Image (cartoon, rainbow, N blue to C red):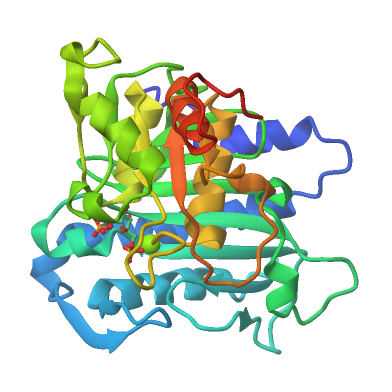
Length: 342
Ligand code: AHM
Ligand code: MG
C-alpha cells in the first residue's frame, strides 16, 4: 500500500537542494519528531496512565505546571540532548538554558520550545501542542548563554508545531513555505497531508479571549467592536468567533481556513506585554504564519523584527489573515484603512 511522502523523506529531498548540507538539520528534525511522537502517545493515553492533573509546582512565570508539562519537557530534553546536533536548548518550563551534558558531542543548532502549549486544555481532553524554534548557535560559542539564544525571529532556521488533536499533525517551515504532516500511527511516520499551506488573505473569523475586553487598548477594542456589529456595523458583514485557549489549535485553524488571533497587551498588572512568550511561542508561530502568506505583529512592530531582551519575555500577538492584521495595525496607528505591513 502507498503511504505518501514521509516527513523525513521530504526534508532529505529539500536538503539535497542545498549545496554543502551535511544532513545535521535532517537528523535534528528526526529527533524532534521522535519526541513529538512520544508526547502524542502520552497525551493520547491521558487518564489511562495517570498523567492528568496538576504537578503541584510552578514554572518560572509563576504558572501552575501540569504533570504533562513536566513529562513533555523531559521527553523533549531526553530525545534531544545526546544526539550531537544541538549546542543548547531552552524551554518554557526551564528558567535557564539547558547545557548539553559534557559526555555528549555538541552540534551547531539551538532549540527553544514550549513542550506542551495550551496545557489548561489537557484535563478537559481538548487540543494541545508542542511549539519549537531552531536557531544557529553563534560561531565559536561552545557553551551557549541566554544572550546566544536572543536572536530575532528572522534568524530562525526552522519553526514548527505538533498539534495533538483528533489527528496528530506536524506543521513546519524552513523558510520555503509551510507544509503539514499527519501522523500515521499504523507505521509511526508523519506523512505529507497538507502541502504548501496558505492563510487566506481575508476572513470573517476572529479569536480573542473576550473576558479581557475591559483591559484592551482602543485599537483592539475598536476592531472587535466592529466585528461584533456585523452586517449592521462599519464592516457590513457578520463575523464568527472562536477561542480554544490553545495557540497551536488557533494557528492551525487560521492556516486552514483563515482568521485573526489576538492575545494583545492589556492593562492588567503583569499583562502590559500580553501573555504569550516571544522566543518559543510568538516567534515560531509568526515565522509559520508569514511563510504561509499571513502577517504577525504586536500592533506596533512586526514580531519577527523584535530584538529579544529575555528568554521568557512576553509580547502582544496579532496574527493571521493579512488584511485583518493590517486593519488592526492601522487602528493602532490611529488610521482607518489598511496599513501595508512587511
Ligand atoms: P501556556 O503556554 O501556559 O499553555 O499558555 C499559552 C496559552 C495559549 O496556547 C493560549 O492562546 C493562551 O494561553 C490562552 O490564554 P487564556 O487562558 O488567557 O485564554
Ligand atoms: Mg505556551
